[in-house]
Image (spheres, rainbow, N blue to C red):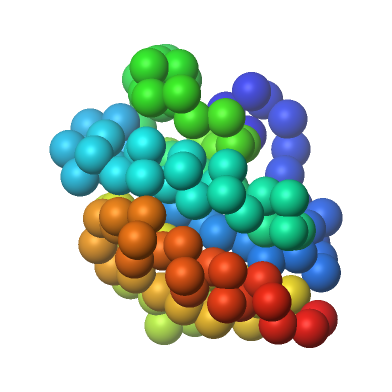
Length: 132
């Protein structure tokens, strides 16, 4: 994690998980940050968890990005991009990109571009309504 704690996706088993791959150097990432926060705030009470995955970055720049953009969900510091490599058939260099994982641990949606809240919110709400 950016704060130095360890993170395991398995700790979120049974929840809908939104993984967002970003970098502080990425202009579209800066633009989508408030959009993601809006969806996070609208869905977290329904068992949806957001996790950022910061890649190809420096820790200080990533921390400053989260502070200035008001990102309150946790982010994994992954400068080598190893998290994306664990997802089958997923392009590890697609930044920004977002993966939504359902309650059964399956990839339910992928977005390989910057998102607006009106694009992501209905997808996340629909997946959150599914039974686990």
